[in-house]
Image (cartoon, rainbow over all chains, first blue to last red):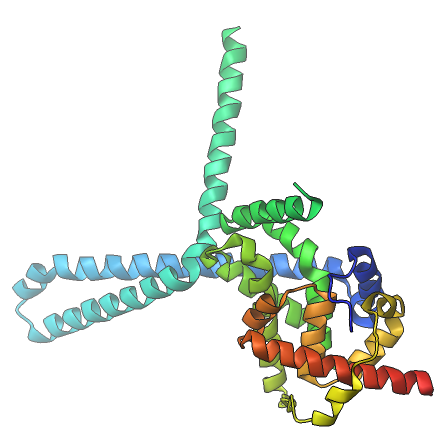
Length: 134
Length: 188
């Protein structure tokens, strides 16, 4: 029967090397495209995040300014205002849901990167201060 | 700790870092598995596909979903499952997805008692590739996962979303089909 132990990694590597598609594939270009796609995804994630915040801000503005709109005593203005507020609330929910379920993990990297950058900056400043104190 | 265990522990750490959105760790995983995943996709899809797009889709899914991976030590199986799903989706889009009828060749059973050394077989890569391409999708996929990617039965069952018994049966018939093809090619 066939030997079912795991094949030797070197032998497998040779086998992969001899595969037409694997040997002719441009991995450098693939890495570049993958990086670009990830960056595009991050840009989209930030846009969705901002859109959720802007929608929420519009809703809050609509609610806060209701007394002012009532004082105008034009029923159609109040209706339009209420419509704007409801649409803003709805879009805020939609964008927040997309942001939470799809894009939040993507933005996590940016948060992590900015924390690391801040730590680096702090370390640099501490080193500079130490040198000045000397 | 053996070499295999230390490699596995190292990989788990890399996966944990990638889960925490460490860019370098993610790229390390890409570099580590890209050739194998490409080979696996090629075995499933055949040659008429843009593998750059297929690979891109697989790794973008990995990037998006890795934060939800609960067991970092199961990364390899999880990755192959994503690759499997993407490849099958591609086949469906191209309307070329045909599931072979496994187990409908009872006469094969009596024919596979002869010896077949996988290590010897791997020495002749051209024959392996040519023969695999002539097998049905399910046969070549299960053989690729078992003997070229080194997954065990339970891992293959998880990748293919089926039972271990089904995997055993598929491997059995895939081996017999491959053996028949190999014998035919040697006779020629």
